[in-house]
Image (cartoon, rainbow, N blue to C red; front, side):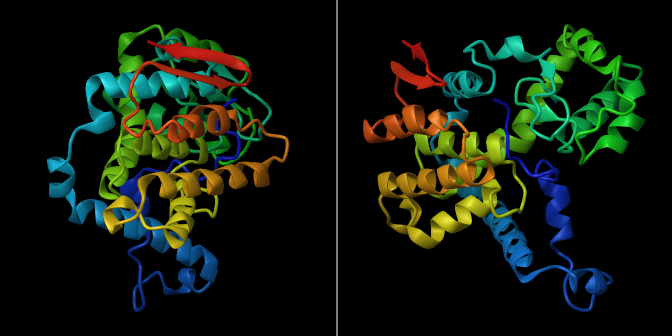
Length: 300
């Protein structure tokens, strides 16, 4: 399963979206802002507030233990995510993965489920083309711009999937996927989790939620989920219980998944992250055993 339920604009890079939220009264954006609902403004402020916290507390994050950012922990995180995203522990085997899984987001591809309909795949190809002009995907940029935000394949078929698979054989494109994963999903999730006082498990919980729900400002995007959790429980950095906060966050996330699709499989929470939490494994120590979609995975 590949990030079913992510919002269409969810993967817009953080620095870009943060700029949009800076428009205020008296600026040239007043007319546009007047059409933004109060609920949407609240969600935008939630993300802007989180990003402000990140910039203000950069020193605190730098002084914190590496946690999930340590090389061995990061590798572990990618393997657990891959069990849910690609049904494998070998996450690097997914560089060339691409298919339309019928979730309304066009083609889903690569190690983190970049989608033609959710902007992140377009951003990946644009950045890759800037660094490697003339690559095998560059010719599809006009089509990718046109289908962005839709489930359309117009201009992509029949050659795009073959071009993706061919490009994925090149080490440079694998590195590009990893860099985009880190820039948009992994690094922001881990930084914010550290600010909230969360250990390696909590950092992973944030990361997996960022991957699945996207870093957008919708009510069921990552920032919307965190904002609701903050209203119900104190984070460890606020003096709250880490286990209680994460339990509430996972409850909120699970409900969001079910709202999007009542029949969705939530085992990536129920028989993976929740079990780690109830076992008291807040530092995500190995060995680990968990189940996703009925399949059992083990890391010694």
